[in-house]
Length: 302
Image 1 (spheres, rainbow, N blue to C red):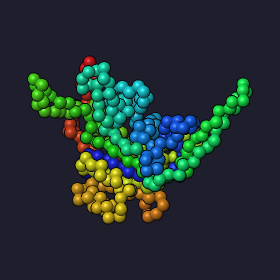
Image 2: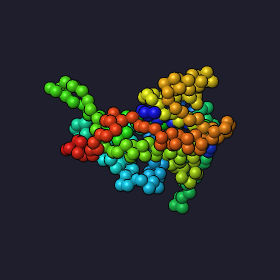
Image 3: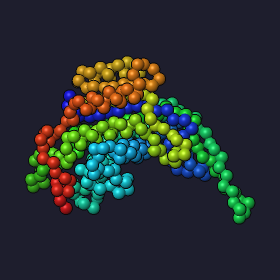
């Protein structure tokens, strides 16, 4: 199979959490993010942060990582061949003034959203002062318990690859592709992405409370097309679920569905089968299988 997209949609239970705090509303020490319908959510930015933290740990343990690394979020470079965040997460360097300073991320996420309206609690916090009797009082919000719906998508067609546009007198005359890493490294990075979604843990202000975003149910889709439609699966009715899976089969896409609460395939088993499938199949490459490998700096000299 020639894989063009890898979509992962999942449900993860969270209890007594403020996985993504917002502004300090009404004098609160910390307020939880929630939508107008009462459902708490975790921003897409936080989801990316947690995912790249997981990718970083997995990459550190990988014997085939060589010189690759995950750059810090506030210092992203453009060395796609070694920096996983630059490759998967994209970058914007406005001072460059041309295409070489911009990369659209192959990896995209949605905010994590609770399936049902959330029950919000508040902890009373008292800051004692030894200098006077005016002690500061505030509250810290938390959500009692939620099943969080999360989605991740990897556009394989741009993984480790740059698309360039050609112009003649300000008119576009076509485009071409440049490959920055080997096909083996592209597949390794796709594997890291899949495995990282199983280990979502680094949520803001929650290190002491051990909040986990690890999935209880998961659907992993290896798609022959650029489609994110399957991200609706866990919020759809039974008829729509059946139609989504039928549509995947009709275009010869392959999926793995795991559930720790029921059925005969656990989340861990679904991930294992997905990794095995990735290993035995091909990632779509617009450059061709034997394309020349060129570093980003050589491809886009300053």
